Length: 374
Ligand code: NAD
Image (cartoon, rainbow, N blue to C red; front, side, top):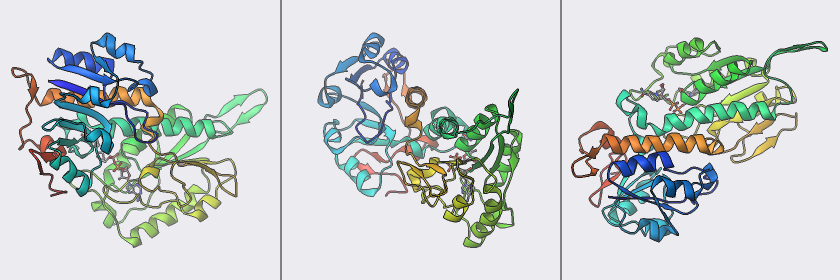
């Protein structure tokens, strides 16, 4: 079974879907691996390291994809590369496919697996690309906030006087938010956080942060069976905004991570809230990829508001820490393959009725099979 790893071509994508470590393991499973030249460069992995691990370094996508039975990707390959994927090959990545994209995979005979759709169950944890990447995004958001902040995170007592600790507010305490809380605490910030899911309150407190939020009967049922936040009523958001507005005016750093699956990110920080903050404060909007939690976020950019607040609205936060993100992402894909691997036949064996397989499979045998796209 030949595995192809392409150089990512989507804008600002710095990650790669296999590392020398996972290449060695794939070869150990009986695969041959072709890595397109330059695929790992943005993650600090030169071609020579892939070659040392046993991969063939292919000059271009056509050479990498010729005869491939498995294609590993971070994001969906662009049309030109997709056209080179052999019929019957399995494509594994974060494909973010809509109905048209899924139909295109089906008509090209590509069995597409969208790893971002894996169920959030214990058995799938080690192949959960959303978690591995969100974890790093949460860490990186705080580190970049600290870099953009012109004061200090920890309280510093010096002979010249004392600098007070920064007030850090984390909005959304899922995987990214919890890591942001932990990182901000390690840096010495005075950390508070909010979320709508009832379970999040205890998790916030267990990390040593204080909980700030609005709770009512509606928020007691704010979590879907899959563990995600539900879209809540306009009344709930209005009440939440009142609590947040009073708190935000006293914050130095705000880290926004709130998402509602399948929807635009909720706007939690209004223009008026931003205007209430002190000059020099920093807002990081990790939700910028999904439209942002902050009314003034410009996705992909850092902006400075009229009252001197920096808003970091960069997209692809895991891609801002590419070596670590690639290492974890590549392991997630490897775990997916090893979990569904026929050791005798040395090829994937993906039972259609398995919950994880069912969750990620978009197309199979030329047909769109995912319930959300069929
Ligand atoms: P996510 O990225 O979808 O959302 C981030 C956070 O934003 C969530 O905590 C959500 O509740 C919060 N949010 C949404 N609207 C909000 C609002 N108006 N105000 C404040 N916060 C708001 O979430 P995620 O990080 O992917 O985590 C989703 C869930 O999955 C969590 O419960 C997490 O613990 C769970 N999970 C489980 C596993 C597992 O294997 N069991 C693995 C990973 C995650």
